[in-house]
Length: 347
Image (tube, rainbow, N blue to C red; front, top):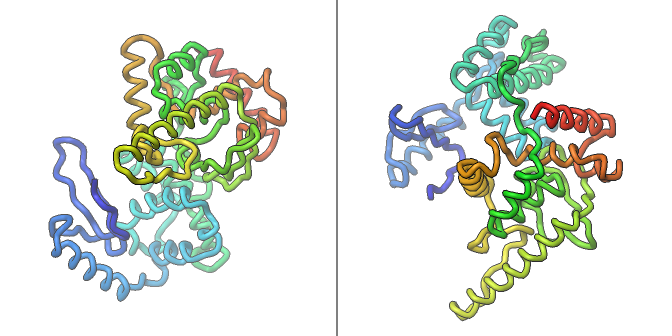
């Protein structure tokens, strides 16, 4: 596994389209030396020093982004949001020296269309969303006179595409829970019965679960959640705990040392905390297997489990429905529920 180096971006082209390479974020320069060598480290150090000398020119897009990243508004964002913003800032780096005075609405539309061709619809819309926020931050602070991204429309979702993150059917839920090993089943159950997002299900701690309640803070928006634990989730977590203790005992017997037990509520079959990438690999491998045997239909996602919770809202108290969805307002929760019921009717 490659170790991550701060300030260095790894680029993996699609198969048949070139070799993997690395570039320096701050200077946007490609690193020539092979990864993991002394020459690579020296080149990164030299580029780091160069970046410190290269302050962005006033009046450029890069200067605005640097100023925004140092603001309380940016610093107050959740880490996941900052990581998503960084992907957009990396994408915009090649035009960082562009004078802000030359950025108009037509130019923003061109950026949107270029991002659509390179990165597809969702990323193109996110570029506009982030650019709108950054320009909106800079407008009252004298960076720009007008927010050129304000009023730029998002790329519409093609009508023929099925809705993303559709609710799971009862048969699909039962098939996945039946076939998933306990470690994977516990993660899926946290989404299925508590409505946790994937990242939160990976990081939630054992201390967050007690007395039939999960108490946590949503990583996406910082909202404090109190989630009533469904009886099936409680049973699955108890089964995971027993399996966890059994494996810890076996490892302790083999190694003659006390093994480390992670603080997270869910663990992998090796007893380590889940990573989002590791979970997705195991999760979609299982779904492909079940789809091949006809036990589930294509299109299942982990986020679709949040829609599934609200589809069953007629059997859940209004307060629990709101809390399990992580909705900021009851009105939003009702809209989410209505959409889920409409989705189910389409299938």
